[in-house]
Image (cartoon, rainbow, N blue to C red):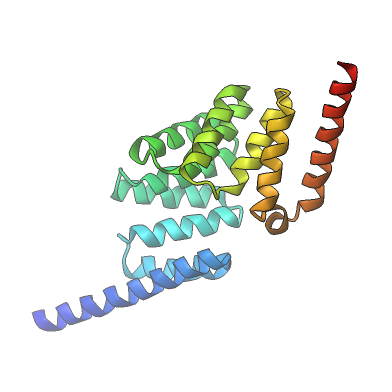
Length: 211
């Protein structure tokens, strides 16, 4: 009987792992409804699967179910309180719900646990902006880029802040880098960013003319 139970437990665990891997793949592909269903199956088979909860939380976040996403990330952190990715993801969900202090706390914890996680700095920069700490925002975006130069949103985020602070050359450089990395094509804002660059160049010419 014990042998049969072990075999059954092994089989259930294998199925849970298969569903978990499928769920992760669906998340990567942006197939969030499928990810939600598959990860839920994995969790029914193994309710201690951190990866299944984390992937389902990401799918829920993308589907706009921020409360459900936070609940999944809460479970991940209950199982492993040092999971930096869960703090990062929960911080995003709190930010989406307008819970700025909770978001900031989670992002600070994500950075504390994994100081090389560029995305956490980028997201904390958004909160810096929201709170009016523009120099802090630039510092966070710059660190995000230093850690991972291919975080394309960090360039456009830093460019926006630089433009507000009057660093027009820096803003233009960031927008151009964003476009060079394919950000405009991926996010469908190529024309808008190109127009911003033209506008900033016009402002630079006016400044030179006045001087």
